[in-house]
Image 1 (tube, helix red, strand yellow):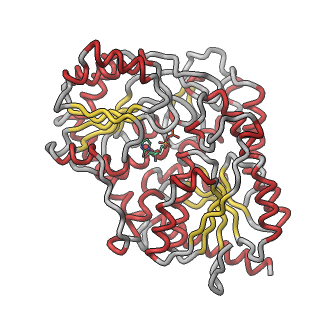
Image 2 (cartoon, rainbow, N blue to C red; image 1 turned 135 degrees about the horizontal axis):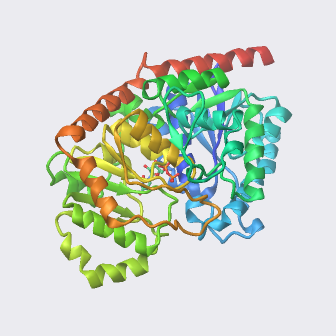
Amino acid sequence: MATQTHGQLRFLLVPLMSQSHLIPFTDMAKLLAHHGMAVSIIITPLNAIRFNEIIDYAKQLNLSIQFISLKFPGAEVGLPEGCENMDSLPSPSLAPKFFDASNMLQKQLENLLAESEIKPDCIVSDLCLPWTSNISIKFNIPRLIFHTVSCFCLLCCHNIERHKVMQSITSSSEPFLIPDIPDKIEFTEPQLPMTRSDLSDGFRARMTTFREAEDSAEGILVNTFEELEPRYVEEYNKVKRIWCMGPLFFASDTFAGENYNKAPIDHEALQWLDSKPPSTVIYVCFGSLSRLKSQQLMEIGLGLEASNHSFIWVIRNGDQLTELEKWFEEYKFEEKITGRGLIIKGWAPQVSILSHSATGGFLTHCGWNSTLEGVTAGKPMGTWPMFAEQFYNEKLLVEVLKIGVRVGVETSVPWAEKQKIEALVEKGKIKKAVEMVMEEGGEGEERRRRAREIGESAKKALKEGGSSYLSTTSLIQHIMKLQISRQ
Ligand code: UDP
């Protein structure tokens, strides 16, 4: 490990090898380094290539950030060659194996810490890697859990559990209120993937180990900011010791400024957006993990076509592309939307697209990173939750913040347990949601105004004196005190 200057704390970040975890973890590395900390991030060789930019970033800005590369033991659990990131799993059904391989990283990290002269002062662990608690005990290093969800979601989950809500549900279609939260929010059982009664025992057991490892941690780091969900931050703070540090993806914009000579993003989508009037394009993307059936993709295509709005539509490689492309040809889809629609097959520069002035709205699966990125860009959102905590994010956007419009999905899919998103959302619902998100007058204007306001507060949170800035400095002081007491 690299040397650190006298008095500088070293944070060891241990993320799950999945895009929606690695992205905020590397952003957290930047944030902590800008606050003067030394940071080491656990990574694997193929993921290091994807996130190489951070090394150049640190070099240019003279920050102390380093990768510690461990071999990902995928082959040892029967995963295909080169499968080091959740998004490269050929099927979600392989997720349990992926978690098994992730657990096997423990031994390598233990050996490394035993051999190294420098000891980290704090471990920041992914919730999904509970074995970091053993390392924390063995090497006497305080450990924090980093949550890649909102305080709204954390409080709802906590209260569902505390009040044993699921035990009193008699029908899966019966809506129930989340007890003891600041707003009146209803869910139905099929919207809650973590508590559904049809979960496998293996999934449940894994969740229990996550919870136990969380309970024994020093505290919780949350990628949110106080102004976004003040009452939920306040209430969850009574449950657990938390520090809100978000929106983490905005750390480099906030601190690096013009001192960082970033290679320009040369992507056709950005040039295409340059040719469009302000706030006229809806950006459609469902994150790094969702896989849609070709029939669903066709409905999306038809819904976007019928909406008459300009759009950028991102289609994942894991989606059923061959069948879709056949349909594109037969229906002459690309001809029909020429000039009005741009299709990206693969990975889109999402943050740059969202912050472009021509982008007027975002149709999202409500992953937490996408949600924060949309919120910070100040854009109204169409909400189409699919799995994990995404229904909570929908409720936050639509019912608490009032900057979202529901597409109208009622059931979540436990991602790792089902092959494909089964329920079909038909084109009429998609068209209607797009039209409402892009609406210029009336309620649409009000949503847009609120979204802009929240976006402004997001951009202030990390700046000196902002809520997340102060929370980060208080975290650092806390770890310093612990370090002194351990000497
Ligand atoms: N993302 C991106 N380009 C894409 C798809 C996703 O940059 O084409 C990024 C997106 O900006 C976000 C992350 O991948 O930071 C997805 O995380 P999220 O929590 O929204 O969803 P998940 O991938 O976990 O479903």
